[in-house]
Image (cartoon, rainbow, N blue to C red; front, top):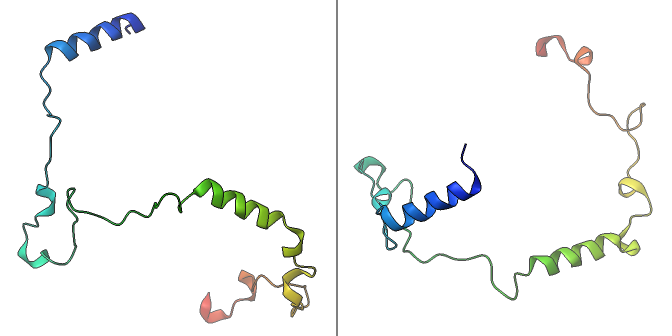
Length: 110
């Protein structure tokens, strides 16, 4: 293994002496052309250069602010339900049933 100094020296040498295989203006959109004519319009592919709808819309899309508001709403005691399960009454003998056990299934289902 090389140490940090050797790695830095190697990186500097490579940056100065090795030609990059990729230019800064690299763009390959060959993936956007379907070669099978039967599948041409089945799976739409968006090119890298095509405009898209960005869901982040500053300053409206402030996730920190939204998280703070959600946390305040969750802590607000006026939002807490007084009775559990919105006044639902247990309908089974064992309170709230989780469904039949494997032993309770009909013979045709086993």
